Every structure is written in C-alpha cells, then in structure tokens.
Amino acid sequence: MKIFWHFLSVTTLNSYHIYKKSGGKLKRLNFLIELGEKLVEKYNQSNSRQKRRSKTPLPTRYSERHFPSVSGMS
Image (cartoon, rainbow, N blue to C red; front, side):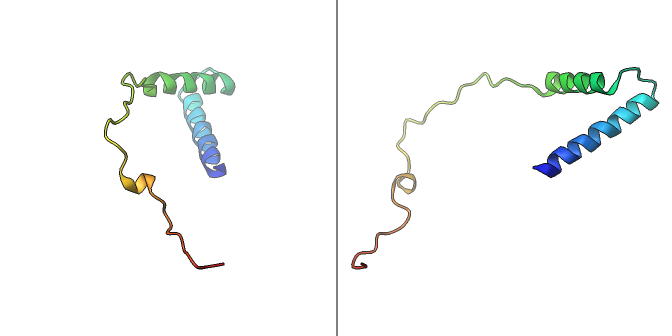
C-alpha cells in the first residue's frame, strides 16, 4: 500500500509542476483540492441499480464443508 501512496504523491507533484510551467497560479494545496474535486466529478458514478439476491439456492460447494472429517484419529 505504501507504493500506491508514493506513486500518487509523485504523479500529483509532477502534474503540479506541469500546471505551474503552463502558467497556473494556484498554490499546491489548492491545486490538489481542485484536482481531487475534478477527479471525483469525472469518475464518480452512482450505482442506481441495486443488487438483488438470487432466488435460486446457493450451490452446494458454498454450503458444504471444505475439508472432509477424518474419523478414527485421536
């Protein structure tokens, strides 16, 4: 998980430098807030369909024991 946060930090810093070189005026904190809001706005998709439970019973592989019981061992 640490590597994810590292890459996220590096990519946001790189994008901030590109933003500043292209004439951006925001401070880094405001840039990050704006970036986060834009990403949420673009990729936030509400799932309007609710998942329904299946009316068919679960397969036995989900309800049976995974390991056979061994009799005669003490």
